[in-house]
Image (cartoon, rainbow, N blue to C red; front, side, top):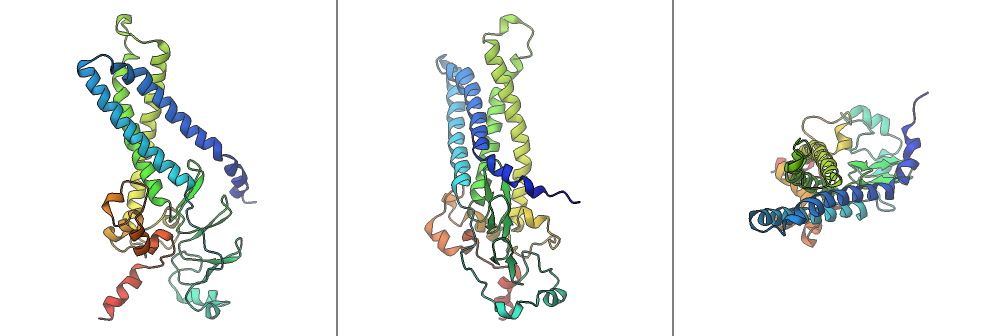
Length: 305
């Protein structure tokens, strides 16, 4: 008998507040080790030590604000659900009951999210736009679903993908800054001379643990960040990357510039904040998750010239 992983969906829903508290706890512990134990007291020393401490603390607090802003933006932003009663523009009646015959003539199977064949979600009992998938944890279909992330207690989809990427970006920068800043104090943990140790063992232990945590998160987040940069460049998602129809060129690939703008918008002033301008929201339907434009469709007007 096959192992049904979806029976754990209820447990994943229960993790909600626990994971948020866990993230806040890690940030709070890091804040204690860096600010309270190490660089906060250095502000009172004067001279070069105070100047370095001021720079480190200013950079740390700026990245912390951007990290928290991006994180809670992912948590509270609706990733995008299929509008009630949504129907595709193509003639549904012609395709109803003919999926098998159409699939034989199509290089894409009827289950693929890039297919122009009408898809229907049996759990939601409604039509599914291309690139949408049903999330068993959230209990609904998500537009341009990338994955369900337990760290943000939410699905990552069309409307909060930018916030998720910025969360990864600022987490990597923040953890890297913390690891580099705590490295000198981390080395003190291994010194043999008692005269060189001027802080308590508790403070040393906090510094040691904070350094290990942040260097581990920096390396792991870097891997995810690189993977998602590659996905954005090809205009594809994590789920689509595992689907059989995916080729080296995504059917939705419009070029790196257009692919980037579909996620981050066209206004450069907003690229590094989890916000969009009203103009971008109007000009880029992909940000709402219902832009079904593919590379082949974009090329049709050019072919007709």
